[in-house]
Image 1 (cartoon, rainbow, N blue to C red):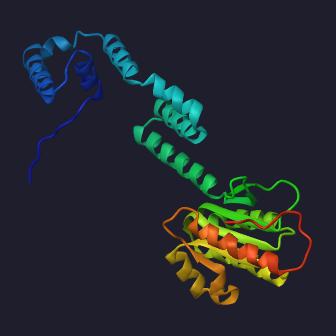
Image 2 (image 1 turned 135 degrees about the vertical axis):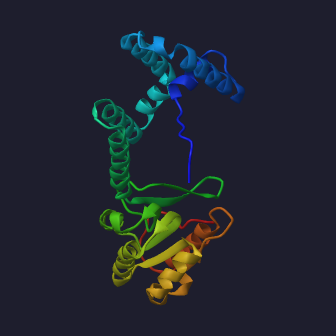
Length: 272
């Protein structure tokens, strides 16, 4: 087997573009000109000072940097800014270019693992609006009779500890806990075991736990874990195409339960 060695230059491409080159033909013409220079003027190239060549490369390289995009990254996202700075300084100071690539990838991975270890959990209270619809707001202070536990993002073994902590904090004096899976993108067995423990705690205290927005995949996992048999199929509301359809039915069931028990509550049941 045989091959032809080839190489490319971002610097030469940038110079071509800055001088009006728009098409691939411009690259062909530049290649021909460089070939002519190498054939006829190569002996004279040794007289060109390295400092002048370095200056040309530095000017061209600086012009290739998108300053507006750089400022936007530094101001907008902390993780992206850290990865950018680590990669940039490693490129400058590391003896080999591939070390900068490794440093950037490693930094990006560490930041991703740090963020993915945080479980997305919000505790909401359903409040009836003036037009009859229900709206949700963050719970501050006194716990309502119906608490919505909104799960979001990726829930896996790395965030199980944080999930357990936040579910424990969300547990209070409510009589019905509506656990919503609508915002969950990924979930594994470890996170489901934490949720199962939360369900068992609520049922052991005589409260009702309702699951809404349950996808077919999550439903199968819950079934294999015998959670559905324990909690009852009537407390499982699967995900539907209509926005808030599953949550609406779950809230309707929660209101029915609240009306059926005799205890003093300050808020009225929500009318769906």
